[in-house]
Image 1 (tube, protein in one colour):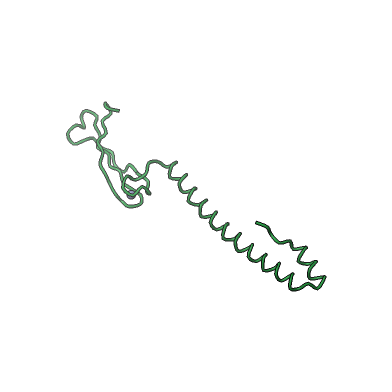
Image 2 (cartoon, helix red, strand yellow):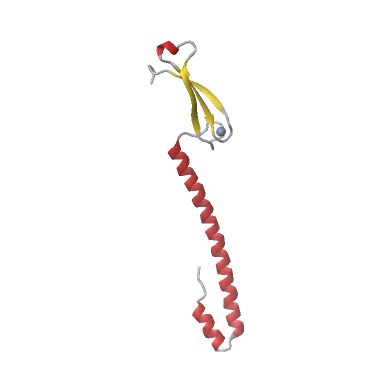
Amino acid sequence: MEIPNIKEIFELIKKGATIEAQQKIIELKETIISLQEENLKLKGENLSLQQQIELSEKGERCPKCRKGIWNLIKSEPHSTFGRLGVLERTYKCSECGFTEEHIFDPHKE
Ligand SMILES: [Zn+2]
C-alpha cells in the first residue's frame, strides 16, 4: 500500500496546485481508513488468539459446546466401588453449563 507523502502535498500547495494537493489528501484519507480497518481486524484476531491461548493453558474444552473450559467440580468415592479407590468425578462447562459424570478408576490409569 502506497501512502501519499505529506511533504509532497505541501509542495503541491506551495506551487498552487491545490487540485492535485486535494487529490493527494483524499488518497491519504482513504489510506488512513483502510489502515484503521486493518488495525481493527488485527486487534480482533489478536484477541481471539489470546483467548485460545488462555483456554489451552487452563485446560480441556467442553465436549458439548467446545468453547467453555471443562472444570472438575466434584470428586468423591463411587457409591459402589468407592472402597476400591474408584472415584466419581463431575465435570462442568464454564460456558454452557453442561455437566457429565465420569468414573475414575485409578487401577486402570
Ligand atoms: Zn459447554
